Amino acid sequence: MIYYPPTFPKEKEEILKKLFLYLIDKNIKSKKEINFFIREFLVNEKIKDFFPKIWHLNFIYKRFFEEKIKEKKPLLSFLKVVSIRSLSGIVPLSVFTSPKNSCPFACVYCALVEGAPKSYFPDEAAVMRAIRSDYDPFNQTFDRLIQFYLSGHHIDKVELIIQGGTFSFYDKKYRQYFVKRIFDALNTDIEKIIKTGELIFDNSKNLEEAKKKNEKAKSRMVGLTIETRPDYIDNKEVLFLRKLGVTRVELGVQSTDDEILKIVNRGHKVESVVLATKILKDAGFKITYHLMPGLPGSNFDKDIKVLKEVFQDDRFKPDNIKFYPTQVVKNSPLANWYQVGKFKPIDEKYLWHLTEKFKKEIVPSWVRINRLVRDLTRNDLVVETFPSNFRQNLEKYLKEKNIKCPCIRCREIRSQKIKGEIKIKTILYSASFGKEFFIEAVDEDYKLLGYLRLRIPSFVLKEEKFFIKSLNDCAIIRELHVLGELTPLSQKKQVQHQGFGKKLINEAIKITKNFNLKKIAVISAVGTREYYKKLGFEYEKEGEYMIKKL
Image (cartoon, rainbow, N blue to C red; front, side, top):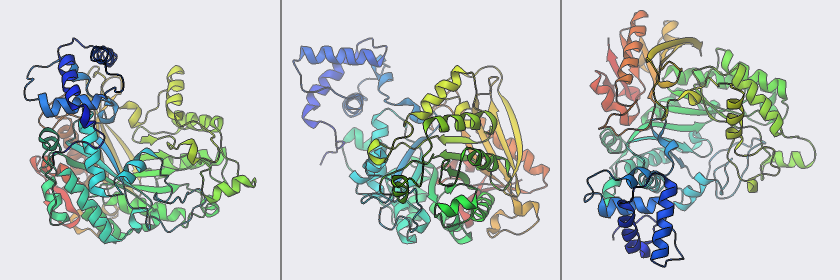
């Protein structure tokens, strides 16, 4: 059987080939012009019931014409659908675990809907994709890679995010299977399947073999993120997460106020957040906090206090945050509270003032704000209190007021040109009883080209032994990220593959030596091991770190 993407109109293949040849020699200068010439072609051919998508043309090009067309044609540069997806240097890919046994808790703000993991809805875009794949990890990953590839993105650097309930609550066997099948999809030659139609899937004997293959695969996993609760993190869980290849953990923190956590039936106290953050950072993980302003029992002053505490109290200080302002969703206890007048949700004005104050007065330059609101449909909400495009509206307002947010996301170079001299700067701060060094490469406009997070762990500062022996007497690089448009491993571009990563690592080594430490480790994703090997790092089986002796 010859492979075609599920939604590709096979019956229109000959027309699409003819259309591609019609477009290829046009002097196209924009996507608007593509649409103009498509309409012209369809009128000439008297076709009324069909209008092709850009990815249809990309598929036709890859399968039938790429080997024949050697010169660079104007059309080819416009076959990328959503360029912003790969402007942070990687392609982010989300998959969902099974709705069955997704979380044992009953937080009041959380929805429980049949067919979706707890707190999610079947009509959310990412969940809909998971449902179409019957929550199969291989199919979710494979189908998404196909979509990215046919949308014109390079897919050799993939950051995987596993979503759906509490990951640490699932059975270990299931989790191991789930991650192994993700690697199988990444190890499958997507490009060859698209070009030849020949379906050859990778299926390793076990997780270890799948990971080993991915070190040199065409689509390498450069980061693996999971979502879990702080009270599920302990030494055994940390070692298991490393066995899976996890490099980032998203913690459902919600609030740093014990009274609020009690009201919402969270099931743990702030102490669990402090302990989980410390152990994860000492083991090298990147940390994302989920924060929920507007919870029952909170108010504007309390929300500001929580946000200040998160970034000014040394017990916390996450690397990333996802802002999930409290919304009244269907099939949640909070919906009942709202109906009987027990809870009043925050409105757009409240959120506007809160986020403006947050960005102006609290946000440090070493954090990335991944999200400001959750993308829910009106169908999921009991009452809509602010629009889903709130972030875009806020960014427009801040720009008009000339208010610059210092967070990583707002400073990323993306597709902009580098201005002036590039400098390496270091920010030192205390966090989770250790020392954090945020080393950044910036241009003269303070646009961010890349950054590295180096940690002197708490156990090193206290001269104690750690449960992961290979990290004793060791500084650890928790994150290295070179920004700009995703560039294939074999090419160079304005930011990626220009040696910025090496410069940042050299700076980290200097700092490590100042602490009289003999080793530096990296919590390397499976797909980045080859990169670190070239820089003199060696693979350490315990905890699966890359370690360099100094």
